[in-house]
Image (cartoon, rainbow over all chains, first blue to last red; front, top):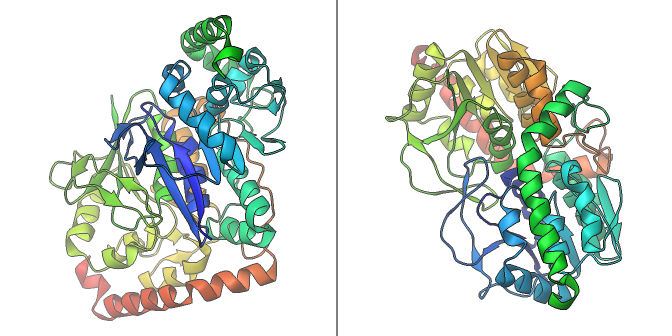
Length: 230
Length: 230
């Protein structure tokens, strides 16, 4: 039976949050990967790559896996009743509810993280608790049928982990082999703990204004009663 | 001065070959990443993701970096005089000529690998010598201004390596941190040497007919005189 895997796509999505898992999921022999948005107009991602949705919210079939990627564009989703309603409805029926990077904050805004262990991009980790989640370190964090991944490239590790869960280790290993996923990062700079302190300081400064805007939005929606909305 | 980085996009490209380096390059403060094809019509990648070119061959500015991704679709490029001519002309002026996965075979068909160390996806490694390249193991192989990467996900390691070369280690580390690139593959299955033998056998069998078709094309163009064409 065909697995229906749906990935949300939206303006200013971080495209690698989406395209990494897409490639893993689309490598499954009998899976259909949907890119879902309000309409099927082409969308510009945070770094300029144009992505084209394949189904609208209205057209989207019941999903086995719901996946929400992150990126600068999530700020607008946190207060978007149409998006949050779609996610809640699909999550209620899906086998797995998942996110990559700051996609987990959107799940949080939909009320789907309450009392559950979750992760997100390192720069937004402090926001998880505001949604009632249990902030948990880890590249891929599982709590029951909820899988949340760390920042951007963690989506590859997450999606291979989920394929193993769905179809067994041999299938995940076959996909890992086909994608030659034996990474050799040129530096030990992928986390704030390992990157040179100067590099971390510059990154934090560069992100500061976006993170402040994000925090203000989150505080507003939490104050307005996240519990009621969900 | 803006860096112009051009990535070839084509029908049945392996999208993660392209989207990994795209995300790294597009994270450079002053870079313009171009997706280049014959026209600007939307293109379907090997696993179904739709990508949209940003410039045509005719519109494309002189590139600082030329990058050719791989995928099933490269078979058609190996005999495509328009594509090979475009790559030769850009390569003659570019600071760096690069590829991910089986994109290096296209560089080979353009006559750009002769006498140079290069790599490609593990399943196509044996084809490199047919183009006069020196097949070289390695996730990222450098020979002068030629950088070739291994299969698919090696594009992330390659692009971070090239950013360090172009702009210094701190810039590459900042991008690695922003993409939280501290990979934790769930299995040791990313290469034929580390994957379970049964998984490798199935993968090779599944690829066999495509690889035979590829070899026949390569033998034909080599017999027709790769040297003359280039």
